[in-house]
Amino acid sequence: MVDIEQLNPRNEAALRAWWDVGNQANAYRPGKPWPVWEQSRVSLPAHNPERGVTLLAAIDGREMVGAGLLVRPLKENLHTAMAFAYVRPDRTREGIGRRLVRELEVVAAGDGRTTLQGEAYLPPGVSGTAPEAFGRAMGYAVASRESIKELATADYLQRRSGLVERAPVPDGYRVITFDTVCPEEHLASFGRLLGMLMSEVPLGELDLAASDWPPERIREAEQRQVDTGRHVLTAMALAPDGAVAGVSDVRVDDSDTVHGQVGITIVDPAHRGRRLGLALKVATHDLALASYPALESVDTSNAEVNTWMNAVNEALGYRTIETLLELQKKL
Ligand SMILES: CC(C)(COP(=O)(O)OP(=O)(O)OC[C@H]1O[C@@H](n2cnc3c(N)ncnc32)[C@H](O)[C@@H]1OP(=O)(O)O)[C@@H](O)C(=O)NCCC(=O)NCCS
Image 1 (cartoon, rainbow, N blue to C red):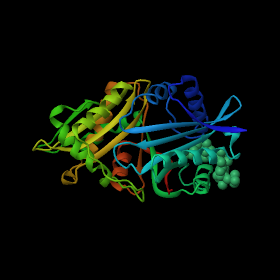
Image 2 (cartoon, rainbow, N blue to C red):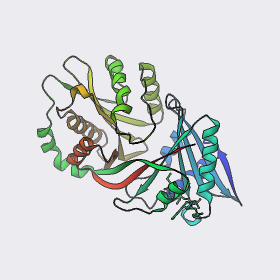
Image 3 (tube, rainbow, N blue to C red):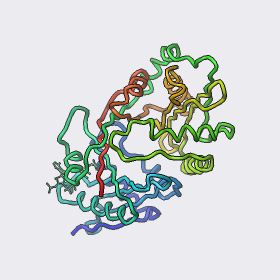
Image 4 (cartoon, rainbow, N blue to C red):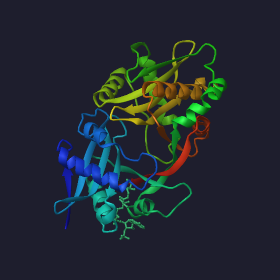
């Protein structure tokens, strides 16, 4: 008899069991599909001004055999939530995943969420895998296809000088870099650019709306990163008039300085076509490697239709390792 229960992330022993289930359920995937324990231990119980998190556990006797995660955005897109289910590989096809997703949907609906989003990962070019079939069986449609890419930093270093030649900082522009905390004088302009993100990133059918980023919201989000040991290594392009023309970042956690992830990248449409995207990415990867010389890999994901971003990533040396299906269901 398997029970589905909510789990308090401050109960460290229970959180560790939850993390173990997710770790085992993702072990078949390439790259770095699951955070290290120390990162989950710190970040899941910590205050998060941006997102509410609910953890579910599927318990059989004294053993945790399944894990669920519901993430609710708190600042915008209040009609949405993201649902994730993980089942221990020796306990799949028993209906545990289905019960976890049902309960995640109940929690989401109880909070007024009407659009649920999920993710399924597959090897590139392959279809018919368990997560895909499971998503379909749960009533989720494919809303967008992304490719997950990984860069070996050794490959980047080999290509670096050619990239710098191809993408010099354009005349009149400046590129500055910082760790997590944006200089005060650029904060308002940075917020304006962040507000464009949702309308500029290809979202496919995903039902997501744009957001406002006033300075206090940026500062709160930065504080959460600082508090949880996450370094958002940022490069910012400043236009001749001082406006923020583009931004990109690579994130590295104190608990895992061998792997990084790309966070956001955006160039203001008014400043495109000057290779700022490539110049910013070179600046963030340089900063990440200067700060964390042991960094071995960085991962990112982009919509397959995002031709421009894919071209930049290929130039840097990123290689596709997985396909990500963004799933969506209207409750
Ligand atoms: C995807 C996953 C959660 C499914 O968990 P599960 O407990 O095996 O799922 P269930 O037994 O409840 O299956 C529900 C339905 O999904 C479909 N399904 C699940 N696994 C399937 C598979 N391997 N092949 C075909 N259909 C499958 C079936 O329709 C199944 O119903 P049925 O058994 O009555 O035919 C589990 O395989 C897993 O943890 N995978 C790794 C993590 C992951 O990818 N999670 C999803 C992304 S968040």
